[in-house]
Image (tube, rainbow, N blue to C red; front, side):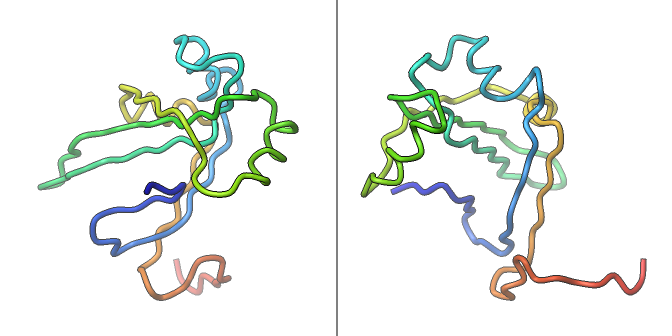
Length: 130
């Protein structure tokens, strides 16, 4: 069963990601313009995968969007998802995008990776030398 969490084969690094949607070119807008999302669907998640990379060269790139059918409004969707038990039924949309096109769908994008098992996520740190 899939989950809304990034994962790779060995998991040496783990972390978090955050992004600000671009105003005019946000992922939802892109899907609407391409006719890939219906008026009664809500974009729940976007997944970017890259690999298998060898010799410093980027391998395959895949982008997937996951949409929920039934509501296109956050305020009506949230209580539905809160009451749901078990896996959330979604429709997967596979997108053919370059890395530049993918990151162009966001105003800002930040990824923080930490070595797995050190439990650093969310811990404060001080930069003592730069």
